[in-house]
Length: 173
Image 1: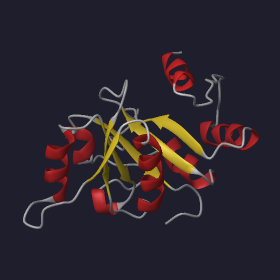
Image 2 (image 1 turned 45 degrees about the vertical axis):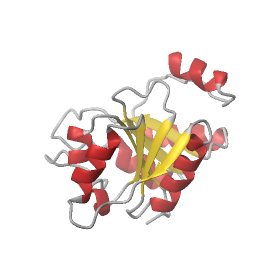
Image 3 (image 1 turned 45 degrees about the horizontal axis):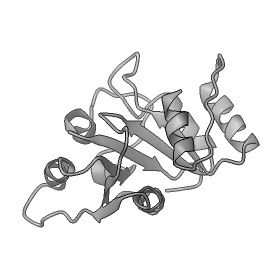
């Protein structure tokens, strides 16, 4: 798997697991606990029903796992070296930690929203100069986890670059 090869080339211990599951959230949590993982990376996919990219298994995973749950909307994150961190949201501390870890291999820029501009519009514009945008889940960026919905957050629908949404997991905001 390409992701595992890239992680290992960067000195990150990683391995891919694949198995059938009738309860993905419980199984992901069980494997992560068994491996003593601090972080779980999952992809954001189009849901089978509705448009809630932060629904279904993601709600359950974040509700069970104690560490950071990183949800990747991959536009082209092959080698993200220019990281843009956007503070705000209930899970800002977790997102900051992940952004700082990712920024060690390149450059980390702190996004500062202009006072006179919509912050999402400004972040979308700033994203074009970076490889990956890291934000905390929550209402501040219209990235709250919910079971069902028809709303596609602008950051996901319009992002010109890959987006990593970080949720602090169980017990976090």
